[in-house]
Image (cartoon, rainbow, N blue to C red; front, side, top):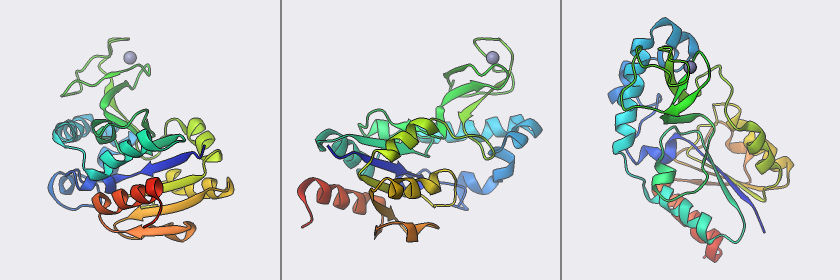
Length: 232
Ligand SMILES: [Zn+2]
């Protein structure tokens, strides 16, 4: 049974209307990465950070999965081996599209984390600097997302999956954020066939055996069809 490991990034959610820091419009134009996506930024101005993630949480809750999310759920159902989805995205569009056991290496907007005691719970729609931790009661709630300078989640499990996979695909990732950008090297070392599916070549495109470029909602269904039915 061949195991497939799929890494997804912002590019798979872009067609569902969720932007990134690289899109200089809308929500994203108003904020700097250093201010809202680092522990230092949160320490400096937690009000601003909560405001930013509250707005993102609302946007993410209203977003719908697109054809790329849905077809990966179909691959999980129809592939005879295991299909592991690892995502850098903090939305839950893979789950909304029907995927199972998605590994959120950068956390999710749906989660809250106590900066004081480490307790995790389901985030309220709006968090602020008075939101109490249900465990220790201190007003130290923060989004349960991994900021720059913090350790990504579930790395031991992810490396185990990469060491045992036959196919590794990176979908909609920039190849600029580590450790995810190095997963292709782990997979290659494990003897896997590697494929990049992206709108444009990523920073690590030369590390892949195969590349496919275009909108995720088109190229991901084509790739899944090739896997399940053989190349046409
Ligand atoms: Zn606490």
